[in-house]
Length: 359
Ligand SMILES: *Cc1c(COP(=O)(O)O)cnc(C)c1O
Image (cartoon, rainbow, N blue to C red):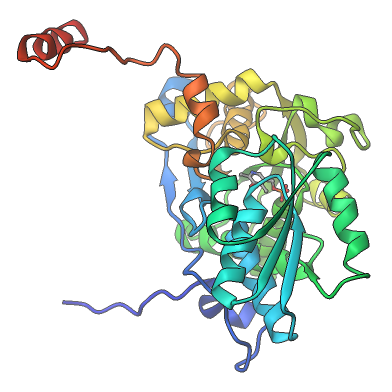
């Protein structure tokens, strides 16, 4: 029996690439090391010779990639002696902040838009014991408030304006390069604040400089059409989309995202909510992978660009699935009204008839 070292999270795994020392008190829940799943059925449906992988970040401890950033942000906050953290959130940041704060024994304050956060995310923030402030306003308003209050109260901001967040998140790119033994040709992500696409580009660039990979991907960011400041060329006042995780009108990493788009020769594009939901469902039905709506923007966009040839045949494509489908059961059930569900008597004949009628 071959023994394997216990995986203890991304800070321990990548400490040589992260701003930590031997004395840094690591706050970890075993985040990172997520599966890179090669799609089998969807490329066949597209009728194109492309290799598409999904990086299933929904399998992080709180169900989204935010854990990668939060292990670093909370670790550094605790190292600096902070007793409280604060963030504005569309949901997943609040879940991650609450969990890592619980682990560290400090307080998490989270500002969420009233009524606009997915059920699973709210349940998480509540269970992990965060102090939840539902604001009558959207994410952008919450973000503005968090930035202002941080000067006036003894709390550390753990939104992605906290540079340690991106440091943690860049490790997803490391994992992909290590697994593929190269960088992909295209890396597609959903874009809200654009912190994650920025972090991935940092990760790829670092490994490229270190000679771990000898090429770099084109970075492709997809937004929801009702919430697409990168397509409009400036902030959107009232962003609206079913993909609540990217319902953000004023991205915090605006300049960095434009810079990496140019450097990587990638692009931004937008998807209608219907196309996002169709991609979410297709991925679940054809590949057995359930992601949340925002996450499906990466695959939905990639499929469209593969079909059109913008992503050429022969390409290796990675799509980040940022969050777990279980986060937002309401949206899932809502769009599966015509799911294959029948109500029958608890009786053998009825079960047999149901089986036969569905085959
Ligand atoms: C946070 C989040 C995003 C957006 O990431 P940014 O870094 O804000 O661009 C996308 N999908 C999910 C599920 C998220 O939680």
